[in-house]
Image (cartoon, rainbow, N blue to C red; front, side, top):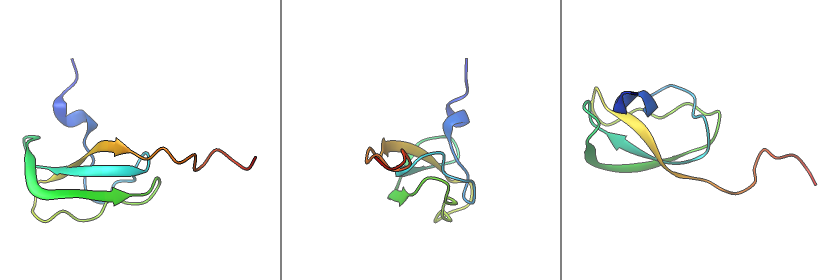
Length: 69
């Protein structure tokens, strides 16, 4: 069984895909700080408080990165 924190990203880590990332607390619970939009391969922004992380909640589905047609 995987840990609930295994799918979280720390500030500064590279985003694996573009989308909306929810800020969660040290134990994985939601925070009142909302979401941030992050582009694939960009670093995750700083969080409002220490110990917070990000969880992907709404991946972007725009076809980016699939090459030209």
